[in-house]
Image (tube, rainbow over all chains, first blue to last red; front, side, top):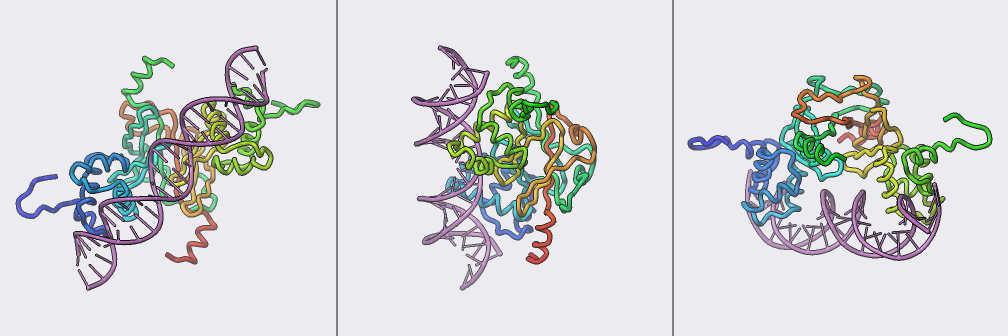
Length: 151
Length: 151
DNA sequence: TTAGTTGCAAAGGCTTTGCACGCGC
DNA sequence: GCGCGTGCAAAGCCTTTGCAACTAA
């Protein structure tokens, strides 16, 4: 978000249009929210844009996110046991660490490099499009708290 | 765990008891069903054991599966967009290919070997317990059908 | 103008929770 | 006998669907 003179490139609007979708206020709000807060759930986004666009409903957010995901504008991510998250980073095949305690999500790049685990040892006739890697762990904060709890 | 004369080893019962859980008819049925049909959902299992144990309810199945998962007897697997699946294979870190069309699930071992992608490039202070790798693809059958449909 | 989007309402699927009865140990 | 596990009922959360009004193009 760089202030500029005259006409801004307005990246979000361009991205939406480039994806073949119409540019609307709710869509802009959703995309900008997602740029600022990756790994947001539909509910998070709804809460985040509610103040700016009071008329927008949860279902509208779901619809927008579905449209974005279908257009390849955002990527879905389903952490086990919590609602679907969305993020803007698409194209690069990064993965996620999820804290099993506080559900925090963090991006990580795979050790292997560009195309990480895209090659299963035995494809069994499957054609593989993409690989989702989810690391389950404990974030730093939760490690400390868990040490105190001492289960 | 060697087969013995006279008394059957009764693996499922032993496994349940070894996990510190009481052995009951529904639990045996669930575990045996899972041995024969890996990647079953709670609903699948419910349907599978209903004939043998008509009194067992869906909620009971959920409870049993939760207890098994907590005891490390079974492993949960959440394919994006479909209900949670369960499987008996635990300990070995195998992964899954999911057909995006028919939702079929297949086990695969990772290319890397024993501890596949357990080492994220940047752990950010996280302690990683496990890595879930999910390959999204198209199974052989769906490939052929998709070729005809020709989207 | 025209097609795509939004708003509103409602339903749907999957899963969890609460409490009394029953069974394994 | 004791305590865990089950059965039954109900609610909960997340998400999708349907239709009318609206707005971007």
